[in-house]
Image 1 (cartoon, rainbow, N blue to C red):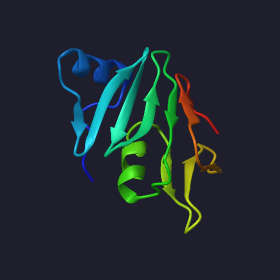
Image 2 (cartoon, helix red, strand yellow):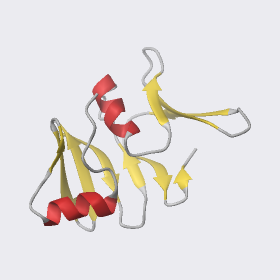
Image 3 (cartoon, helix red, strand yellow):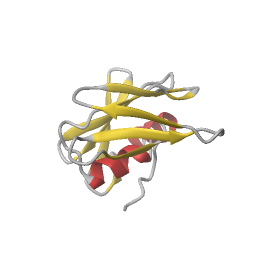
Length: 117
């Protein structure tokens, strides 16, 4: 899948201030208030805050492309849960696997300290 040119608040902010909003194929970013919204096609899928929070919203698009974009923003793995939707997973250092379902609406999935389960 396509790699995004920037995936952090400071990097995207610098691009936007330089007049560029495209960060990947069919993927753009914009300022909204103090945050940055990342849009895939016409759906806002990621909200980045200046304090390091990452929110995601699938808008019902549980597609490979949407999950690929989300995986580039968080140190976790967004993947299909069969026909039921999308889950976020991460393998811990002790081998245990954390799982979190991602349903409709905005979800806080990471802070400056790492992924939130």
